[in-house]
Length: 416
Image (cartoon, rainbow, N blue to C red; front, side):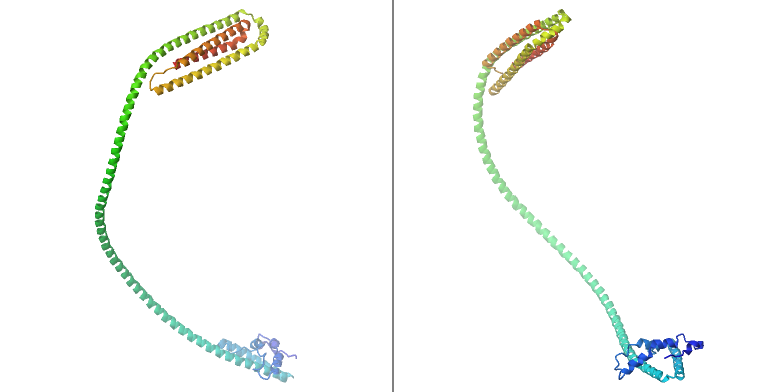
């Protein structure tokens, strides 16, 4: 069905929503069909499906009853009513449209009745809530007053308890002071009695220990006295034996001095003899150097190659003599140690050399002198037939031999 929207063409109406749009949004035919299917408005299950549309088409005046909204509601409703009446008068299908309008009005009235019931229930609930809120505020104020009074009571009780605590503390301190004085008096009295008792006990223990020590010391003194007497007897016997030994030592000392003088004399004679022989050899070597011409050096060098074996043999003999000299020094050291041991055993200051050792030293000196003489003779014979330039090693050997002889002489002096 096509309707002519006169309000869109008439700008004097002042409506800012077109009637055509309102009809399209309301969907009046669908509302009428749904309403006509039910027996009553309360039995329709889909009565509230287009509630938002009807409310938009005709706002509920019971939800918002302010003056501003009521004036707007009357203005828009008046325009709708006028336009609807105009359409009914002009349209040939006014009866069908009127039925639609009646169905819509019935639906709106049912919705408005429901909304009124809800509003009354909400107002009743709001009243109850306001009463409960007022009652809660009253109870809160009463509770705050009670809390305030209780806080004051707590402060008062705390002050009372603090004062009582201070009083009890002072009373307890006075009691402790009296108890401390009594305890100090008891301790001092107990200490005096204990000191006397301990002193008596210690005195008895000390006396018993002194008696025991006195008996032990007397026994030790008696034992030491007997040991001392025995030791004195032993020392007297030892002294007599030492005196007799000293007399014998004096005789042996004279003999040792004589032997020492004879031994020193022999060593000096040997040193003089060896020094003279060495000087003679040195002079002989010097004379040989001066007499022989330099042109025979090459020939003598070849002859010296032949005599290298003899030189090596002489060096070996010198090494043997050195080893024998070391052995003699070792024997002398052993003899010296034996003399020192004997001197310690006899507790004297004189050293006694055994006759066997003296004979052994005399034989060793004779053998050493004999070997040295033989070595000097061999060296002299070799120098007579050898080149003087190659005899420098023999000069060194002779000096070494002389130093060893001097060392033996000094060791003999020390042993004496």
